[in-house]
Length: 359
Image 1 (cartoon, rainbow, N blue to C red):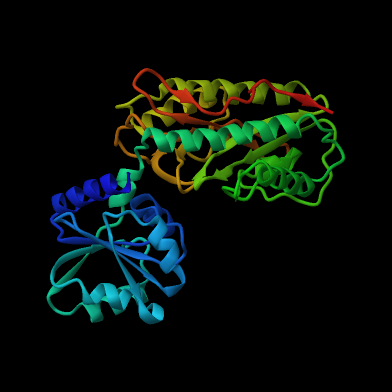
Image 2: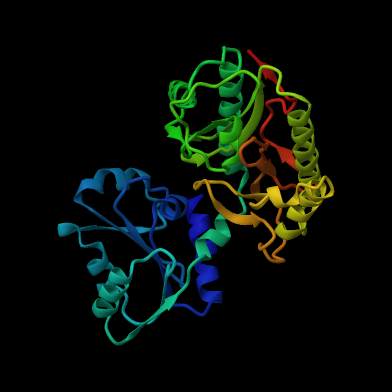
């Protein structure tokens, strides 16, 4: 699988007028080579050849994991950049100018010599990663199913009187017991007025009856992430809260319906946003509709007002997560994880979106 990806990347490198591309970052290296360690670099050439560099600590691991499409070089002393630079030769070499530090870029320039032109080339691998193959989709679906299990387990318990932090710790512990390597991001549990903060951090504050509570959680399973938000009521929340919930739900359904190959992220965002704006709450939906999910919790493509006209493609895996946030009062967000398909969206998040009223 990784050999096929290396071939696709080589073609992309050549199409960009580059002779080679330096690959770094845990997610990109895992996607491209299969390697899961913490020390590594790769060089992919336009002619289809590739070299993977690591140090002595990962000699055995890299032998087991790195795809045979890559020659392996175990670097004495761990100076990976030095070893890579010495093998560049010449030509136009791309690097990730969005990730490489200024210091590393300066060092690479010194080591590479006058015959090498370093070219900023951020986003080439991410362009490939944005479209998932069926194996990746199955891995993400499994991570999504695990979160569905966590919601069913959690909401079968009493919630009132427990703190946000207690619940966040409990659900993250449970997802590990069920096979996750950990959460794919810091879990959000936010009750009442605290839910009006889209990225609220769980507090040591007990949840009171009559509150809406936002749970935004994800699990990392076999390297892939999931992401799902549900808003529930602890005790009867009142008519106004139910109205806000219904607006968000209708917006979320509109966003899901909009997803199709060829539709831009901006269009999908606009379809959901129109529902909230028509209800007079447009100013209270300040973030984008969604984002790509895969080896990283946030990756291409984006669904937002600023996403541009780049069309969605079959195989994109994205979140659809509109929200309304009323400062000092409440917040509501509903989020599903979805595969863009030619025949209609494949929704990976199956836990109910009916407003649950919990004890």
